[in-house]
Image (cartoon, rainbow, N blue to C red; front, side, top):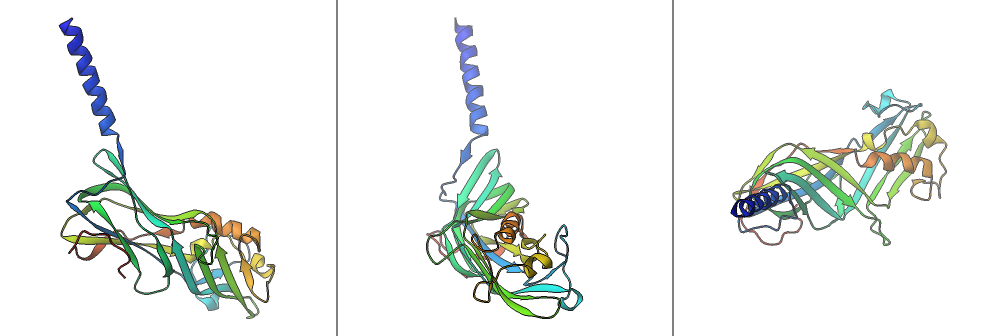
Length: 254
């Protein structure tokens, strides 16, 4: 009987170990926590358009292509940044607070900070979460001009108001208590417009003289852009963002 009880105890201990090794944590920060900061910006404000659908928009000077879109304003309202990674054998998820009215063309990105336990993380994925809004501050608004092959210029506006995310992957990173590390997701506007053609833009319907692309206007183009959104971002990883002087609750700290 003792042998059976000993074997049963061993099985229970092994099973418990396996469950622990695969556990998932929302990573409630401990006393050794440090700061992680997240931001979002955009690049490739001038994006050439091809006549026929390419695999993705190639970068080129505006004078070398028939048509192009030039964005002059890019405003985002981000619900949160989500940090997903593994620390040892534990899956970690951290969600920041929101970040509103972000100028994606600002040369100095705005950051939101959150607490994270010190240590080394791997298999990292970061998402900027966008949430449909019933108010005026929709998740993403891009404004600019469309220049056709004849040099005619038309105001253009992309109004995104749906649930989505922009994601980026990061290699292994180690957080310490001494420094704050920050990462910026870059939204590549040429990737956002991948497969959108000059012919489609030329044929688009105008609203009050503006070429509006939204859930309710020029929906064929809107659907293409939305399909590209999640994979239009990347990041150069985490960089030193200065001394970690306090471990309180943190908002944006541009």
